[in-house]
Length: 244
Length: 295
Image (cartoon, rainbow over all chains, first blue to last red; front, side, top):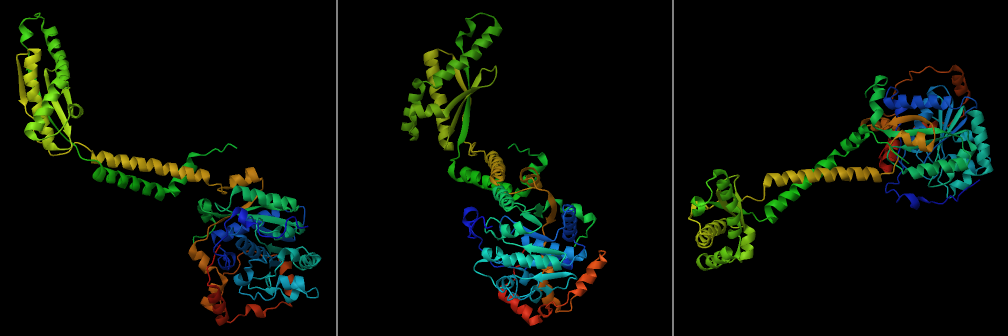
Protein backbone atom coordinates (compact mmCIF):
# COMPACT_ATOMS: atom_id res chain seq x y z
CA UNK A 1 0.00 0.00 0.00
CA UNK A 2 3.08 2.14 -0.23
CA UNK A 3 2.19 4.95 -2.58
CA UNK A 4 5.64 6.34 -2.54
CA UNK A 5 8.95 4.98 -1.52
CA UNK A 6 9.82 5.82 2.01
CA UNK A 7 12.66 7.97 0.90
CA UNK A 8 13.19 11.42 2.08
CA UNK A 9 11.76 13.96 -0.30
CA UNK A 10 12.24 16.79 2.11
CA UNK A 11 14.62 18.57 -0.17
CA UNK A 12 11.75 19.58 -2.41
CA UNK A 13 10.10 21.74 0.15
CA UNK A 14 12.35 22.48 3.02
CA UNK A 15 16.00 23.04 3.35
CA UNK A 16 16.41 20.60 6.21
CA UNK A 17 16.24 21.56 9.84
CA UNK A 18 19.46 22.19 11.64
CA UNK A 19 18.13 21.04 14.97
CA UNK A 20 17.28 17.43 14.33
CA UNK A 21 17.66 16.33 17.91
CA UNK A 22 14.39 15.11 19.33
CA UNK A 23 13.18 16.87 22.43
CA UNK A 24 10.59 15.95 25.01
CA UNK A 25 7.23 17.60 24.49
CA UNK A 26 5.19 19.48 27.01
CA UNK A 27 2.59 17.51 28.96
CA UNK A 28 0.68 20.57 29.99
CA UNK A 29 -2.63 18.72 30.14
CA UNK A 30 -1.11 16.50 32.80
CA UNK A 31 0.59 19.11 34.94
CA UNK A 32 -1.73 22.03 34.60
CA UNK A 33 -5.26 20.93 33.97
CA UNK A 34 -6.63 24.42 34.31
CA UNK A 35 -4.41 26.04 31.74
CA UNK A 36 -5.82 27.52 28.56
CA UNK A 37 -4.16 24.84 26.49
CA UNK A 38 -5.63 22.02 28.54
CA UNK A 39 -9.03 23.56 28.00
CA UNK A 40 -8.35 23.76 24.29
CA UNK A 41 -7.27 20.10 24.23
CA UNK A 42 -10.49 19.09 25.91
CA UNK A 43 -12.42 21.03 23.30
CA UNK A 44 -10.58 19.10 20.62
CA UNK A 45 -11.40 15.86 22.40
CA UNK A 46 -15.08 16.73 22.36
CA UNK A 47 -14.95 17.66 18.70
CA UNK A 48 -13.23 14.41 17.82
CA UNK A 49 -16.01 12.53 19.58
CA UNK A 50 -18.67 14.53 17.80
CA UNK A 51 -17.09 13.89 14.44
CA UNK A 52 -17.28 10.14 14.98
CA UNK A 53 -20.81 9.55 16.16
CA UNK A 54 -21.77 6.97 13.60
CA UNK A 55 -18.64 4.89 13.88
CA UNK A 56 -16.57 3.66 16.75
CA UNK A 57 -13.31 5.53 17.00
CA UNK A 58 -10.70 3.13 18.24
CA UNK A 59 -7.52 4.28 16.56
CA UNK A 60 -6.33 7.75 15.73
CA UNK A 61 -3.37 9.00 13.72
CA UNK A 62 -1.89 12.39 14.48
CA UNK A 63 0.21 13.73 11.66
CA UNK A 64 1.24 16.94 9.92
CA UNK A 65 2.71 18.18 6.68
CA UNK A 66 6.18 18.88 7.99
CA UNK A 67 8.40 18.86 11.02
CA UNK A 68 7.88 21.10 13.99
CA UNK A 69 4.18 21.58 13.65
CA UNK A 70 3.44 20.09 17.03
CA UNK A 71 2.31 16.55 16.18
CA UNK A 72 3.87 14.97 19.22
CA UNK A 73 2.63 17.64 21.57
CA UNK A 74 -0.89 17.29 20.26
CA UNK A 75 -0.71 13.49 20.29
CA UNK A 76 0.60 13.26 23.84
CA UNK A 77 -1.74 15.82 25.28
CA UNK A 78 -4.75 14.41 23.49
CA UNK A 79 -3.82 11.02 24.90
CA UNK A 80 -3.78 12.56 28.37
CA UNK A 81 -7.18 14.23 28.02
CA UNK A 82 -8.72 11.10 26.55
CA UNK A 83 -7.36 9.11 29.47
CA UNK A 84 -8.73 11.79 31.79
CA UNK A 85 -12.12 11.22 30.26
CA UNK A 86 -11.91 7.64 31.37
CA UNK A 87 -10.86 6.00 28.14
CA UNK A 88 -8.13 3.43 28.46
CA UNK A 89 -5.78 5.11 26.06
CA UNK A 90 -2.58 3.95 24.46
CA UNK A 91 -0.15 6.39 22.93
CA UNK A 92 2.00 4.72 20.29
CA UNK A 93 5.11 6.53 19.14
CA UNK A 94 5.00 5.46 15.51
CA UNK A 95 7.53 8.08 14.54
CA UNK A 96 10.27 5.54 14.01
CA UNK A 97 12.56 8.20 12.58
CA UNK A 98 12.53 10.88 15.21
CA UNK A 99 10.89 9.36 18.26
CA UNK A 100 10.02 11.51 21.26
CA UNK A 101 7.71 9.52 23.51
CA UNK A 102 10.60 7.93 25.40
CA UNK A 103 11.93 11.38 26.23
CA UNK A 104 8.55 12.83 26.97
CA UNK A 105 7.62 10.11 29.42
CA UNK A 106 11.13 9.36 30.68
CA UNK A 107 10.97 5.83 29.38
CA UNK A 108 13.49 3.52 27.84
CA UNK A 109 13.61 3.48 24.08
CA UNK A 110 15.23 0.07 23.89
CA UNK A 111 11.94 -1.76 23.79
CA UNK A 112 8.97 -0.58 21.85
CA UNK A 113 6.98 -0.70 18.64
CA UNK A 114 9.84 -1.71 16.36
CA UNK A 115 10.67 -4.68 18.57
CA UNK A 116 7.06 -5.68 18.59
CA UNK A 117 7.01 -5.47 14.79
CA UNK A 118 10.17 -7.47 14.28
CA UNK A 119 9.60 -10.17 16.90
CA UNK A 120 6.49 -11.96 15.76
CA UNK A 121 6.22 -14.00 18.94
CA UNK A 122 6.29 -11.07 21.29
CA UNK A 123 3.31 -9.77 23.19
CA UNK A 124 2.46 -6.11 23.27
CA UNK A 125 2.06 -6.27 27.04
CA UNK A 126 5.79 -6.63 27.41
CA UNK A 127 6.42 -3.31 25.73
CA UNK A 128 3.61 -1.09 26.88
CA UNK A 129 4.36 1.14 29.87
CA UNK A 130 1.92 2.47 32.37
CA UNK A 131 2.13 6.17 33.06
CA UNK A 132 1.35 8.35 36.03
CA UNK A 133 -1.82 9.38 34.28
CA UNK A 134 -4.53 6.96 35.15
CA UNK A 135 -5.69 5.01 32.14
CA UNK A 136 -2.88 6.20 29.91
CA UNK A 137 -0.31 3.79 28.52
CA UNK A 138 2.61 4.44 26.27
CA UNK A 139 4.31 2.31 23.66
CA UNK A 140 7.63 3.87 22.71
CA UNK A 141 9.20 3.59 19.29
CA UNK A 142 11.77 1.00 20.19
CA UNK A 143 15.07 0.91 18.33
CA UNK A 144 15.07 3.10 15.27
CA UNK A 145 14.94 0.61 12.39
CA UNK A 146 16.48 1.21 8.95
CA UNK A 147 13.18 0.53 7.17
CA UNK A 148 10.31 2.09 9.11
CA UNK A 149 7.88 2.33 6.19
CA UNK A 150 8.26 -1.35 5.33
CA UNK A 151 7.81 -2.35 8.96
CA UNK A 152 4.64 -0.32 9.32
CA UNK A 153 3.26 -1.76 6.10
CA UNK A 154 3.60 -5.39 7.16
CA UNK A 155 0.86 -7.83 8.08
CA UNK A 156 2.35 -7.92 11.52
CA UNK A 157 1.45 -4.27 11.98
CA UNK A 158 -2.13 -5.04 11.05
CA UNK A 159 -2.16 -7.77 13.68
CA UNK A 160 -0.71 -5.52 16.32
CA UNK A 161 -3.21 -2.82 15.49
CA UNK A 162 -6.04 -5.27 15.92
CA UNK A 163 -4.78 -6.55 19.25
CA UNK A 164 -4.23 -3.04 20.53
CA UNK A 165 -7.66 -1.78 19.54
CA UNK A 166 -9.19 -4.81 21.18
CA UNK A 167 -7.40 -4.17 24.43
CA UNK A 168 -7.62 -0.39 24.58
CA UNK A 169 -10.46 2.02 24.14
CA UNK A 170 -8.37 4.33 22.03
CA UNK A 171 -4.99 3.99 20.37
CA UNK A 172 -3.30 7.23 19.33
CA UNK A 173 -0.41 7.13 16.86
CA UNK A 174 2.20 9.84 16.76
CA UNK A 175 3.65 9.71 13.25
CA UNK A 176 6.37 11.29 11.09
CA UNK A 177 5.49 14.19 8.75
CA UNK A 178 3.48 13.40 5.65
CA UNK A 179 5.50 15.26 3.04
CA UNK A 180 8.73 13.71 4.25
CA UNK A 181 7.92 10.02 4.47
CA UNK A 182 5.05 7.69 3.78
CA UNK A 183 4.74 6.18 7.27
CA UNK A 184 1.83 8.34 8.29
CA UNK A 185 -0.04 7.49 5.09
CA UNK A 186 0.31 3.79 5.77
CA UNK A 187 -0.98 4.15 9.30
CA UNK A 188 -3.73 6.56 8.30
CA UNK A 189 -5.09 4.05 5.81
CA UNK A 190 -5.39 1.45 8.51
CA UNK A 191 -6.85 3.48 11.34
CA UNK A 192 -10.28 4.90 12.08
CA UNK A 193 -9.39 8.54 12.02
CA UNK A 194 -6.63 10.95 11.12
CA UNK A 195 -5.95 14.40 12.51
CA UNK A 196 -3.79 16.88 10.68
CA UNK A 197 -1.84 19.28 12.83
CA UNK A 198 -1.13 22.64 11.18
CA UNK A 199 0.98 25.24 12.86
CA UNK A 200 0.33 28.89 12.19
CA UNK A 201 2.82 30.45 9.76
CA UNK A 202 4.94 27.34 9.56
CA UNK A 203 4.25 25.60 6.28
CA UNK A 204 3.44 26.63 2.79
CA UNK A 205 -0.21 26.26 1.87
CA UNK A 206 0.83 24.01 -1.01
CA UNK A 207 2.35 21.54 1.40
CA UNK A 208 -0.79 21.41 3.49
CA UNK A 209 -2.81 20.82 0.33
CA UNK A 210 -0.40 18.10 -0.68
CA UNK A 211 -0.72 16.49 2.73
CA UNK A 212 -4.47 16.35 2.35
CA UNK A 213 -4.08 14.77 -1.07
CA UNK A 214 -1.68 12.20 0.32
CA UNK A 215 -4.15 11.30 3.04
CA UNK A 216 -6.99 11.14 0.52
CA UNK A 217 -4.95 8.82 -1.64
CA UNK A 218 -4.45 6.56 1.33
CA UNK A 219 -8.21 6.70 1.86
CA UNK A 220 -7.70 8.01 5.32
CA UNK A 221 -10.65 9.26 7.30
CA UNK A 222 -9.57 12.83 7.99
CA UNK A 223 -11.44 14.04 11.03
CA UNK A 224 -10.11 17.55 10.78
CA UNK A 225 -7.34 19.95 11.55
CA UNK A 226 -5.85 21.07 14.83
CA UNK A 227 -4.59 24.59 14.33
CA UNK A 228 -1.55 24.97 16.49
CA UNK A 229 0.46 27.91 17.74
CA UNK A 230 -2.18 30.61 17.54
CA UNK A 231 -1.54 33.85 19.29
CA UNK A 232 -4.55 36.03 18.63
CA UNK A 233 -7.44 34.17 20.17
CA UNK A 234 -5.72 33.25 23.36
CA UNK A 235 -7.50 35.82 25.49
CA UNK A 236 -10.88 34.37 24.66
CA UNK A 237 -10.11 31.35 26.73
CA UNK A 238 -9.12 33.16 29.87
CA UNK A 239 -12.71 33.34 30.84
CA UNK A 240 -12.70 29.64 31.47
CA UNK A 241 -9.08 28.84 31.96
CA UNK A 242 -6.82 30.42 34.51
CA UNK A 243 -4.02 32.79 33.73
CA UNK A 244 -0.95 30.84 34.64
CA UNK B 1 -8.38 33.41 -5.86
CA UNK B 2 -9.59 36.70 -4.45
CA UNK B 3 -8.56 37.34 -0.93
CA UNK B 4 -10.44 39.87 1.10
CA UNK B 5 -8.14 41.59 3.52
CA UNK B 6 -9.84 43.40 6.34
CA UNK B 7 -8.59 46.57 7.92
CA UNK B 8 -8.13 44.66 11.13
CA UNK B 9 -5.78 42.21 9.48
CA UNK B 10 -3.74 45.02 7.97
CA UNK B 11 -3.39 46.68 11.35
CA UNK B 12 -2.37 43.38 12.87
CA UNK B 13 0.27 42.82 10.22
CA UNK B 14 1.64 46.34 10.60
CA UNK B 15 1.66 46.03 14.36
CA UNK B 16 3.55 42.79 14.19
CA UNK B 17 6.23 44.28 11.98
CA UNK B 18 6.36 47.57 13.85
CA UNK B 19 10.02 47.11 14.60
CA UNK B 20 10.86 46.72 10.94
CA UNK B 21 8.90 49.83 9.99
CA UNK B 22 10.46 51.77 12.80
CA UNK B 23 13.99 50.76 11.90
CA UNK B 24 13.31 51.64 8.27
CA UNK B 25 12.26 55.09 9.43
CA UNK B 26 15.44 55.52 11.45
CA UNK B 27 17.44 54.24 8.51
CA UNK B 28 15.75 56.81 6.27
CA UNK B 29 16.55 59.63 8.68
CA UNK B 30 20.16 58.50 9.03
CA UNK B 31 20.57 58.17 5.26
CA UNK B 32 19.14 61.59 4.55
CA UNK B 33 21.16 63.07 7.41
CA UNK B 34 24.29 61.63 5.84
CA UNK B 35 23.40 63.12 2.48
CA UNK B 36 22.46 66.46 4.04
CA UNK B 37 25.48 66.90 6.23
CA UNK B 38 28.20 65.26 4.16
CA UNK B 39 27.21 65.19 0.52
CA UNK B 40 25.27 68.37 -0.18
CA UNK B 41 27.43 71.49 -0.27
CA UNK B 42 25.76 74.25 1.67
CA UNK B 43 24.68 77.26 -0.38
CA UNK B 44 24.57 80.89 0.65
CA UNK B 45 22.31 83.59 -0.58
CA UNK B 46 22.38 87.34 -0.49
CA UNK B 47 20.57 90.10 -2.31
CA UNK B 48 20.75 93.76 -3.14
CA UNK B 49 17.75 96.00 -3.70
CA UNK B 50 17.49 98.52 -6.49
CA UNK B 51 15.06 101.06 -7.76
CA UNK B 52 15.07 102.74 -11.16
CA UNK B 53 13.78 106.22 -11.80
CA UNK B 54 12.74 106.71 -15.35
CA UNK B 55 12.95 110.11 -17.02
CA UNK B 56 10.24 109.31 -19.49
CA UNK B 57 7.76 109.56 -16.68
CA UNK B 58 6.95 113.19 -17.40
CA UNK B 59 6.64 112.75 -21.13
CA UNK B 60 4.07 110.03 -21.13
CA UNK B 61 0.36 110.19 -20.59
CA UNK B 62 -0.76 111.65 -17.33
CA UNK B 63 -2.81 108.60 -16.49
CA UNK B 64 -1.25 107.56 -13.20
CA UNK B 65 -2.59 104.09 -13.33
CA UNK B 66 -1.08 103.19 -16.67
CA UNK B 67 2.05 105.07 -15.74
CA UNK B 68 2.60 103.02 -12.68
CA UNK B 69 1.78 99.83 -14.51
CA UNK B 70 4.28 100.76 -17.13
CA UNK B 71 6.97 101.26 -14.58
CA UNK B 72 6.20 97.99 -12.94
CA UNK B 73 6.32 96.34 -16.33
CA UNK B 74 9.69 97.95 -16.95
CA UNK B 75 11.18 95.78 -14.25
CA UNK B 76 10.91 92.87 -16.65
CA UNK B 77 13.08 94.77 -19.05
CA UNK B 78 15.63 95.43 -16.33
CA UNK B 79 15.54 91.83 -15.44
CA UNK B 80 16.40 90.85 -18.98
CA UNK B 81 19.13 93.41 -19.07
CA UNK B 82 20.70 92.09 -15.88
CA UNK B 83 20.72 88.58 -17.24
CA UNK B 84 21.93 89.62 -20.65
CA UNK B 85 25.48 89.10 -21.83
CA UNK B 86 26.03 92.84 -21.97
CA UNK B 87 25.93 93.01 -18.23
CA UNK B 88 27.12 89.55 -17.29
CA UNK B 89 30.19 89.57 -19.54
CA UNK B 90 31.24 92.78 -17.89
CA UNK B 91 30.55 91.36 -14.44
CA UNK B 92 32.55 88.26 -15.24
CA UNK B 93 35.43 90.34 -16.51
CA UNK B 94 35.54 92.70 -13.58
CA UNK B 95 35.12 89.95 -11.00
CA UNK B 96 38.10 88.12 -12.43
CA UNK B 97 40.15 91.26 -12.51
CA UNK B 98 39.29 92.86 -9.20
CA UNK B 99 38.12 90.05 -6.93
CA UNK B 100 39.87 87.07 -8.45
CA UNK B 101 36.60 85.18 -8.87
CA UNK B 102 36.40 83.13 -12.05
CA UNK B 103 32.91 82.69 -13.45
CA UNK B 104 31.69 82.66 -17.02
CA UNK B 105 28.63 84.72 -17.82
CA UNK B 106 26.69 81.49 -18.22
CA UNK B 107 27.53 80.35 -14.73
CA UNK B 108 26.64 83.75 -13.39
CA UNK B 109 23.33 83.58 -15.19
CA UNK B 110 22.44 80.49 -13.21
CA UNK B 111 23.46 81.99 -9.90
CA UNK B 112 21.67 85.27 -10.34
CA UNK B 113 17.95 85.73 -10.13
CA UNK B 114 15.93 88.92 -10.20
CA UNK B 115 12.84 89.15 -8.08
CA UNK B 116 10.27 91.82 -7.83
CA UNK B 117 7.72 92.24 -5.10
CA UNK B 118 4.17 92.53 -6.29
CA UNK B 119 3.24 95.86 -7.88
CA UNK B 120 6.42 97.49 -6.74
CA UNK B 121 9.01 99.40 -8.67
CA UNK B 122 11.68 97.99 -6.47
CA UNK B 123 13.43 94.79 -7.32
CA UNK B 124 16.30 92.79 -5.99
CA UNK B 125 19.21 90.91 -7.45
CA UNK B 126 19.59 87.64 -5.64
CA UNK B 127 22.72 85.55 -5.82
CA UNK B 128 23.09 81.97 -4.63
CA UNK B 129 26.60 80.56 -4.30
CA UNK B 130 28.52 77.95 -2.37
CA UNK B 131 30.60 80.80 -0.98
CA UNK B 132 28.95 83.52 1.06
CA UNK B 133 31.56 86.15 0.30
CA UNK B 134 31.49 85.45 -3.43
CA UNK B 135 27.73 85.73 -3.44
CA UNK B 136 27.98 89.14 -1.87
CA UNK B 137 30.65 90.33 -4.29
CA UNK B 138 28.78 89.04 -7.33
CA UNK B 139 25.57 90.71 -6.21
CA UNK B 140 27.20 94.06 -5.62
CA UNK B 141 29.21 93.93 -8.82
CA UNK B 142 26.14 93.03 -10.86
CA UNK B 143 24.19 95.90 -9.35
CA UNK B 144 26.98 98.28 -10.15
CA UNK B 145 27.37 97.16 -13.75
CA UNK B 146 23.61 97.22 -14.22
CA UNK B 147 23.53 100.77 -12.92
CA UNK B 148 26.04 101.86 -15.56
CA UNK B 149 24.45 99.91 -18.41
CA UNK B 150 20.88 100.91 -17.62
CA UNK B 151 21.71 104.57 -17.80
CA UNK B 152 23.68 103.97 -20.95
CA UNK B 153 21.28 101.71 -22.84
CA UNK B 154 17.80 102.38 -21.50
CA UNK B 155 18.37 106.06 -20.90
CA UNK B 156 16.89 105.92 -17.45
CA UNK B 157 17.37 108.77 -15.08
CA UNK B 158 18.87 107.15 -12.12
CA UNK B 159 19.43 103.73 -10.67
CA UNK B 160 19.67 103.69 -6.89
CA UNK B 161 21.04 100.85 -4.91
CA UNK B 162 18.86 100.94 -1.86
CA UNK B 163 20.58 98.24 0.11
CA UNK B 164 23.82 96.68 -1.00
CA UNK B 165 24.32 92.92 -0.56
CA UNK B 166 25.51 91.89 2.88
CA UNK B 167 27.58 88.93 3.88
CA UNK B 168 25.15 86.24 5.05
CA UNK B 169 26.95 83.28 6.54
CA UNK B 170 23.90 81.11 7.28
CA UNK B 171 23.39 78.66 4.44
CA UNK B 172 19.96 78.66 2.83
CA UNK B 173 20.23 75.11 1.61
CA UNK B 174 20.06 72.28 2.43
CA UNK B 175 17.11 72.57 4.75
CA UNK B 176 18.18 70.16 7.45
CA UNK B 177 14.86 69.74 9.23
CA UNK B 178 12.94 69.29 6.02
CA UNK B 179 15.42 66.74 4.74
CA UNK B 180 15.29 64.69 7.94
CA UNK B 181 11.52 64.75 7.80
CA UNK B 182 11.64 63.58 4.20
CA UNK B 183 13.99 60.80 5.29
CA UNK B 184 11.58 59.69 7.97
CA UNK B 185 8.65 59.70 5.57
CA UNK B 186 10.54 57.79 2.88
CA UNK B 187 11.64 55.27 5.51
CA UNK B 188 8.07 54.86 6.71
CA UNK B 189 6.70 54.33 3.23
CA UNK B 190 9.49 51.91 2.36
CA UNK B 191 8.99 50.01 5.62
CA UNK B 192 5.27 49.62 5.06
CA UNK B 193 5.91 48.51 1.50
CA UNK B 194 8.41 45.90 2.65
CA UNK B 195 5.97 44.63 5.26
CA UNK B 196 3.22 44.23 2.69
CA UNK B 197 5.61 42.59 0.28
CA UNK B 198 6.73 40.12 2.95
CA UNK B 199 3.14 39.42 3.84
CA UNK B 200 2.29 38.93 0.21
CA UNK B 201 5.18 36.56 -0.35
CA UNK B 202 4.43 34.61 2.81
CA UNK B 203 2.41 31.69 1.54
CA UNK B 204 2.25 29.84 4.84
CA UNK B 205 -0.99 29.06 6.57
CA UNK B 206 -1.86 32.20 8.48
CA UNK B 207 -5.37 31.58 9.67
CA UNK B 208 -8.12 29.05 9.86
CA UNK B 209 -9.84 30.56 6.84
CA UNK B 210 -7.50 28.64 4.54
CA UNK B 211 -8.25 25.36 6.26
CA UNK B 212 -11.99 25.84 6.14
CA UNK B 213 -12.32 27.32 2.67
CA UNK B 214 -9.52 25.90 0.59
CA UNK B 215 -8.50 22.75 2.38
CA UNK B 216 -12.15 22.08 3.19
CA UNK B 217 -11.45 20.30 6.43
CA UNK B 218 -13.19 20.97 9.70
CA UNK B 219 -11.22 22.60 12.47
CA UNK B 220 -11.25 20.45 15.55
CA UNK B 221 -9.70 23.15 17.65
CA UNK B 222 -6.93 25.61 18.12
CA UNK B 223 -4.01 25.38 20.48
CA UNK B 224 -2.30 28.52 21.71
CA UNK B 225 1.40 29.03 21.93
CA UNK B 226 2.86 27.81 25.19
CA UNK B 227 4.71 30.40 27.16
CA UNK B 228 8.23 29.41 28.00
CA UNK B 229 7.36 29.14 31.66
CA UNK B 230 4.45 26.87 30.95
CA UNK B 231 6.62 24.81 28.67
CA UNK B 232 9.44 24.31 31.14
CA UNK B 233 7.11 23.45 33.97
CA UNK B 234 5.23 20.88 31.94
CA UNK B 235 8.12 18.81 30.68
CA UNK B 236 7.96 15.53 32.52
CA UNK B 237 11.72 15.17 32.81
CA UNK B 238 12.05 18.64 34.28
CA UNK B 239 9.41 17.90 36.87
CA UNK B 240 11.08 14.62 37.74
CA UNK B 241 14.41 16.30 38.04
CA UNK B 242 13.06 18.98 40.29
CA UNK B 243 11.03 16.89 42.65
CA UNK B 244 12.52 13.44 42.40
CA UNK B 245 9.84 10.84 42.11
CA UNK B 246 7.40 12.01 44.67
CA UNK B 247 5.90 14.74 42.57
CA UNK B 248 2.24 15.45 42.73
CA UNK B 249 0.41 16.96 39.87
CA UNK B 250 -2.99 18.48 39.94
CA UNK B 251 -5.62 15.82 40.13
CA UNK B 252 -8.15 15.66 37.42
CA UNK B 253 -11.14 17.86 37.96
CA UNK B 254 -13.15 15.94 35.44
CA UNK B 255 -15.73 13.28 36.07
CA UNK B 256 -14.65 9.82 35.12
CA UNK B 257 -16.54 7.18 33.31
CA UNK B 258 -16.60 4.37 35.81
CA UNK B 259 -16.29 1.31 33.65
CA UNK B 260 -13.00 2.58 32.35
CA UNK B 261 -11.46 2.40 35.77
CA UNK B 262 -12.28 -1.25 36.03
CA UNK B 263 -10.74 -1.87 32.67
CA UNK B 264 -7.57 -0.18 33.78
CA UNK B 265 -7.39 -2.37 36.83
CA UNK B 266 -7.75 -5.54 34.84
CA UNK B 267 -4.78 -4.51 32.81
CA UNK B 268 -1.87 -5.32 35.05
CA UNK B 269 1.08 -7.01 33.37
CA UNK B 270 2.44 -3.63 32.51
CA UNK B 271 6.10 -2.99 32.94
CA UNK B 272 5.99 -0.50 35.71
CA UNK B 273 9.66 -0.56 36.47
CA UNK B 274 10.39 1.80 33.63
CA UNK B 275 8.68 4.73 35.23
CA UNK B 276 10.62 4.24 38.43
CA UNK B 277 13.65 5.93 37.10
CA UNK B 278 16.14 7.05 39.65
CA UNK B 279 16.77 10.75 39.75
CA UNK B 280 20.35 10.25 38.61
CA UNK B 281 19.13 8.36 35.59
CA UNK B 282 16.81 11.14 34.70
CA UNK B 283 19.58 13.65 35.02
CA UNK B 284 21.83 11.48 32.92
CA UNK B 285 19.26 11.24 30.19
CA UNK B 286 18.53 14.91 30.41
CA UNK B 287 22.17 15.92 30.25
CA UNK B 288 22.94 13.56 27.46
CA UNK B 289 20.19 14.94 25.33
CA UNK B 290 20.79 18.54 26.27
CA UNK B 291 17.15 19.19 26.83
CA UNK B 292 15.72 21.81 24.62
CA UNK B 293 12.02 21.44 25.00
CA UNK B 294 9.72 22.32 22.23
CA UNK B 295 6.07 22.52 21.54
